[in-house]
Figure 1: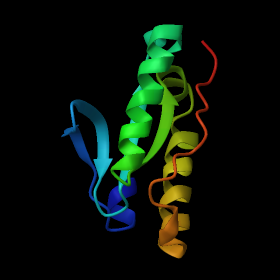
Figure 2 (figure 1 turned 90 degrees about the vertical axis):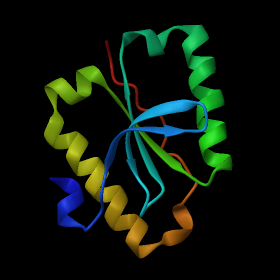
Figure 3 (figure 1 turned 180 degrees about the horizontal axis):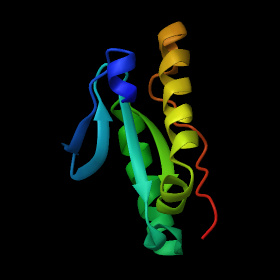
Length: 106
């Protein structure tokens, strides 16, 4: 488990503002988003941008992963989350800055 390695607790299905996030780590202000196929249509892309802005105003960072990426390459997903946590511990000023959206391919 990623959280256990770095003493970071991830809460599943956490309400934040008017949204429910898949995973949340309060220690690092980190939201982990899992995007399924409907996140790739224009209306939902705009919704995601608004949600990301709200989270950033709340001083939260977001790492986004596609379902495909999680299903086909979970080791890479875990590595990206681990890398974020390690970087965050070295540079706490990263809070509120979201990683670029890498929505993978469908």
